[in-house]
Length: 239
Image (tube, rainbow, N blue to C red):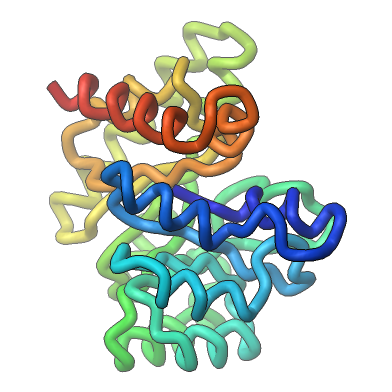
């Protein structure tokens, strides 16, 4: 689970409540597999001090989402999370709007990927489900890619069946190709109770990262119930 937006609510009024670390503890208590947190350059939700507190509060692996900058590299090396997922980042965006252009940014990414890998941090790239981007991930020798499911989620919201099938097939085909080439495929962005099962049913996908929707549902049913329900749907889809 991505706990960023628990921190977004906290930061809206300042202070320490609601605490994203408490969210991490709840996720751990109901069988979550990991915690994702995006330390943005503008610190709009997760703060630097949150990272160590999350690591100390649970035994779940921390996946640090980060921009490809020297500042974020230094922070990742200092905290040594289980994984670091390199994502695109624009200050004006409300949320991550698309995948990283790993193909176009190869020379910028290569030294960052190498340094993280040398320190035993599992590197992932958040990319579109496109062969060009997957080829770039192969050249960069990352062990993991996370496919952006935003277009699939938008198609689902629009009720466009043809587009849903096209986007689903794209993610499925690239997941199979990634696995065939020794890269573990993950997916995430815009996943909800309504649209998660077709994605979760893709056999090669090893992990889904879901955050905003669960935090929103938690307003109505509580975080524990929201996480349990999402996990049930994912497990059903896996058969």
